Every structure is written in structure tokens, then in C-alpha cells.
Amino acid sequence: ITIANVIKIGNLKKLSLLSCRICNKKVDILTSALQNSSVEKLDLSHNNISNNGALSIANLLKSDTNITSIYVSGNPLSYYDIVKLISM
Image (cartoon, rainbow, N blue to C red):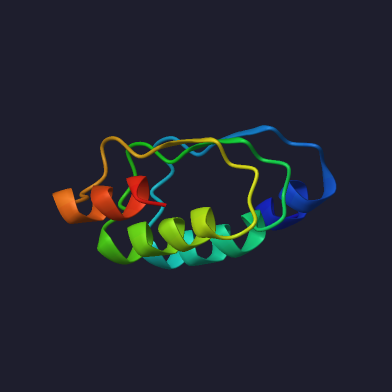
């Protein structure tokens, strides 16, 4: 069973992937799985997400999503990456 299946099957409200060594490529896969999911809170703190990953997350937040809170502290994000996220 994959994380994408768990996200789609259940009524998952909070997804914490804290310190899971998630890189930009895996963020692309994750954001695809999160589209139209029930997830409201997403914790991606302390991973390896940088500018491309921030763009994927920003695009997810622009789409039809239930996410109301996202945590990205401890990632190598620049000021501009953070601006992308909060401007969505």
C-alpha cells in the first residue's frame, strides 16, 4: 500500500511527514496525491524541500484543496520560496 492510496482511501485530516527525507521529486508525487483529498493539516518540517518543492506545494494550495495549515520549517527554503507559499 502506498501513501497515495492511504490519502485517497481514508478520511485523513492530518498528515505528518516530519523528518522523512522528502526531496523535491517526492513533493511532486505527494502533491499529486493530495489533490482533492481530505487532508487539512500537512507537516513537511525538517525535510529537504527547496525551491522546486515549494513551487509544487504552492500550486497545490492554488488548486481545489482542503489544506488549511502547512508546516515547512527546517527545510532549505529561501525567502522567495516562503513568499510563494504564503501568497497562495
